[in-house]
Length: 352
Image 1 (cartoon, rainbow, N blue to C red):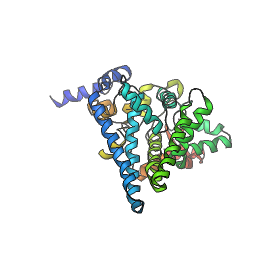
Image 2 (cartoon, rainbow, N blue to C red):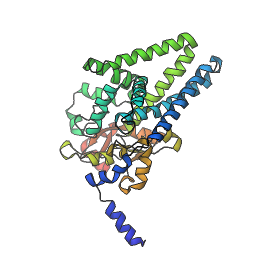
Image 3 (cartoon, rainbow, N blue to C red):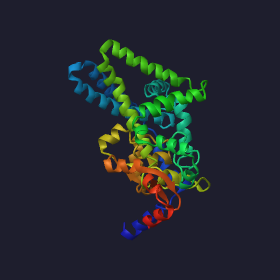
Image 4 (spheres, rainbow, N blue to C red):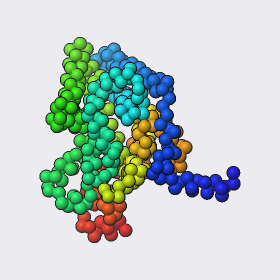
């Protein structure tokens, strides 16, 4: 095909937005059920073998236990993605056997169905809306909203976006945010949260009583620190990254929010495996019914998906995401707290 014609076709395709783009991506929703089962059972087997290894390694070889505990935490992120996709209807939507497994995963990951569905579904419907988007996500305010906030509200906002809050997601996001708080808000609906805590604490106590505290800490607590800490940061960086763009609520658009307010998290193939391709987050937000293992395929096939805002695990990129503070509509970008403390005129002059 002549280069000029190919260029014209590519340019025409790149203009697809909204319903047309959603129609183009829809074929990737089709699940390969045997593949889903194979990947799930393989993941569960690897996690089971890793946890068994922790139990068998003597306490004197605690560095090996720690290494296996970290591995268990990483594999648990992948296991959670199956649960995440199942509740989106991307996997196992009519399987009773899978439903039982997914319920168990929900309790294992301290994210029972009632809470995850309520908060995460809201997040998808309201991704990147500047008012109300903090439900199921980390809060983002504009410069104007920040200026009208009280000192107490500003302190709370800083705490909610603080690196310690994010990386200690085991305690802040999941034990408190996904179990205790929802139960306090609606005990009848979210009774599963406290039950998940009881089961979690009971498992720690049982393993400690039978295999010792070193095994309990490395088999249950350390993996939890990894899966919930890294998972919380992934969720933060997927919607708080330097290239992100936002629109006000009146001009908010679903496709824009998916492609411009959700990042592509570039990782090594191994880390994409551990994280279940959740780094292809802009595609997931465009169509959450695409199974995680088809997200790279969709990106490779559709030009409109190939130029997202990106971030990585590089320390400099992690720091750049964590420094972001509030949205400045005038400059069309996120500001850091340091920039926010400067006078408006100075901020504008520096940006220019």
